[in-house]
Length: 181
Image (cartoon, rainbow, N blue to C red; front, side, top):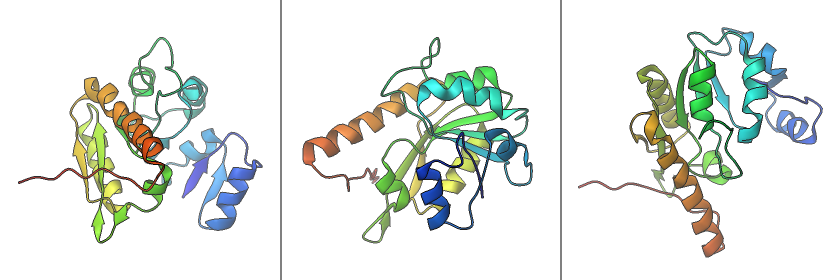
């Protein structure tokens, strides 16, 4: 796996590379341009950095971009979400996913013997198919589709709800699971 980073010498990147030797770091441009390694690009960054990242992506035609950002600390003006900026400024298939819970649940989405739920929204069936497969591969029980791109703002609110619930409970090992009859 190749990760694109702005500063390969940052302590966080170096720690990741020590704990996961199968990961290689590269510049954002180099990571994305390695076509056999980057059919899927996951962006997890503060929303205000998205335009800088878009300028470094290069040609992403035919690639899937998973927007794993949130707008809790601000929106990427003039857009309401990073998803909107990505769909407007790239030729990629974009889906919003992997940002409705925190790191602790991304690292281990299994509670007891059951995988928690992940959520997604977007207009690309191809990107949604990839998000579902990645969620299942990561151990999530399911990846529920919230609908089209106009539902991204609603999906982002799940992250806000999760953070507030965790803060109120004083416990970060909380997760969402949708039950059906």
